[in-house]
Image 1 (spheres, rainbow, N blue to C red):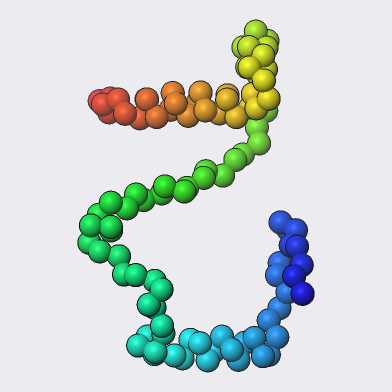
Image 2: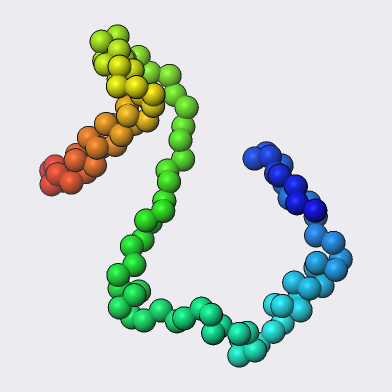
Length: 103
């Protein structure tokens, strides 16, 4: 039976049968695991990998005072003005980080 978990909920505890099955799987030697449908990655594939490609920073709720005309302009662009504000700030942050370190 599938149940939808709320973000605050923890998954239900494993049954004894599930714990036993997990232990059996963990005890299997690597050679006995069928990996034919999972091709090994070549050195080229590993070299082309990008670290953090799917990283999503944690959002933090804040209260900030913004000039009314700036807020009106952001809202006039349609839905998602907070995301646009975040994108503008991120772009400026990254540009600042790219600059040579100041002495």
